[in-house]
Length: 114
Image (cartoon, rainbow, N blue to C red):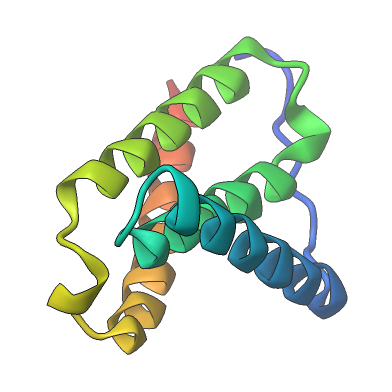
């Protein structure tokens, strides 16, 4: 990759707005299409949008787009793999989300080095 990948700081206000928007979409999809999977939907939307916002300045690079497509595919797969919402406590998603974001940043670093 010849161009430098530039990250972007995320403000608290943006994170809160993203959280509320992710929650609204998750509630809508939980009530219509994916009943019983609202927690996984929220988790996937929030983490994916958080990662996409971070690398927004580098979206012109094909490797960044490919990486984000992989992140989206993984989180869509999680919706089908995770059990129904009653199978695990929602508070479990906070440390899982932090770990997921950390893993995505680490994997992105590996993609950039290649």
